[in-house]
Amino acid sequence: MQPFSEARHHCEQAGALFSLRRYEQAAERYGQVLASEPDCVPALDGLAACYLNLDRAEEAEPVIFHLLRLRPDDARVCYLAASMYLRLGWPGKARAFIDEAIGHRPEADFFALKARIFYLRRQYYDARLIARDGLKLQPDHVRCREIELAARYDAKRTFRKQAEALL
Image (cartoon, rainbow, N blue to C red; front, top):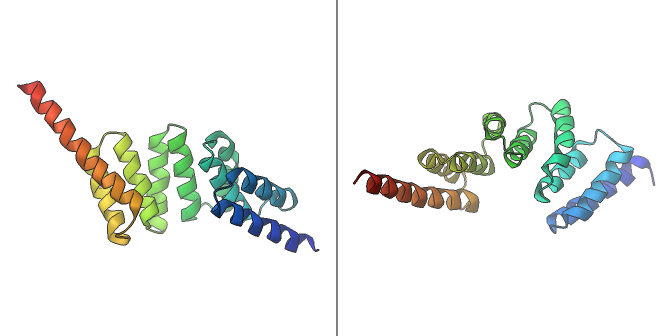
């Protein structure tokens, strides 16, 4: 088997494992691909996504930085960087990257992540509006719907607490 076709085969296997949510095994396969082709963008993308799904953002960081050097204007790479920074506890950097991703290619997943950033900062009204923008693109998007409903509930609860404190 030629090296290119072997790497492609491992990449396809890793993608299948990823779709089955077997992230640890998929990460191993992506690592095999990257051993022979260190600049393989699909393998780097998959490995970063595996690490993020395994809650290993620190390990995803060098992979995402490598992706950013290879494809700085790629919406998917910006989305991965935003996810990583949010998991590392840096919502400001996460917001900058998700805004860039939305600027390149608006998708409901991107709006869901941006709404989550605002929700975690307790900016419920803004989170609802952003989630609604995602729902305009894809009306059945589950994460946008969840954030929109949670933000509505928490906004009402916060308002009631503030009103009670004034009385």
